[in-house]
Amino acid sequence: MLHRPARFTALDAVLLCVLAGGAVLLAWRVYATQDYAWRWHVLAQYLLRFDEATGRWVPGLLARGLATTVRLSLWTMVLATLLGGAMGLARASGSLFWRLTGGAYVGLVRNVPPLVLIFIFYFFLSDMLLRALGVDAAVRALPGWAREALAWAMAPADQLPNFLAALMTMAVYEGAYIAEHVRAGVQSVERGQREAARALGFPPWQQMRLVVLPQAVARIVPPLAGQFIATIKDTAIVSVISVQELTFQGLELMAATYMTYEIMISVTVLYLLLTLTCSALARRLELRLRRAWEPPAAPGPVDLAPGGR
Image (tube, rainbow, N blue to C red; front, side):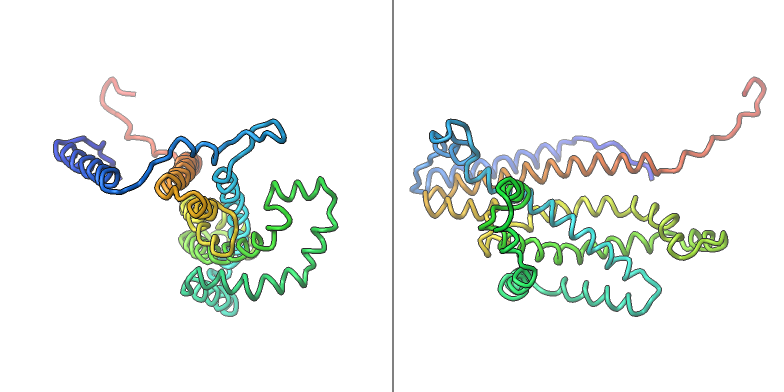
């Protein structure tokens, strides 16, 4: 498909002016009509502040919330990719049992509100599961350096149960969407590829590992990148179970300082910086994969005219 270069027209200029005028009018209305004392000058301490007790700069509440959001998003994508990959392969399997298993998982999770899933995991499953696994006792028995490493990688020991409950919920929820990406990617590989592999004598698991999956992964990666960005935004919902991620810290600061606009604008900007950065990285990854797996262009016609080569 040929892509024509985009042109900036007079209509685009008019639309941009209308949008800019609307934004300026909205900002003026908020500034002029609201009886509100703006305090942008005190906001920096919630991002980075100097701790006199230790004599060094430490992250503020918003920066710590952002770090928790990043950690929760990364762990969620790892677990959701494993769970969604297995369920996606089950959905694309030739076995009726595995197809029903994958279909039941996707149908159940995708048709239940994520807030309901969070409460189910937090109040019922995670408490019983963590107690059965002895997570609390295991964390208390860890040496100091291991507890610090755990706090750096996930959450402090006193916040770990809530973090794990949120992680399990997010992994199950996002895994249902990843399962559909995997199923679509596997089923998009042409039937002739499998038939050729079968004709060469490959058993089913080698057909999948050597022929189907390498082609499917190239098609799955772009939607997976989009799913990771959606996961970052979805983490805001776990603030209802007191996971101290970015939205939770913003709400706490709003309740303590009454700096509603400054805090919410800052939280929005931090989310935008995070998601736009991930979008740019995903775009670069997609282009690299396209160049790596795109078939070489066919040679052009040979010029047989006199003097041609």
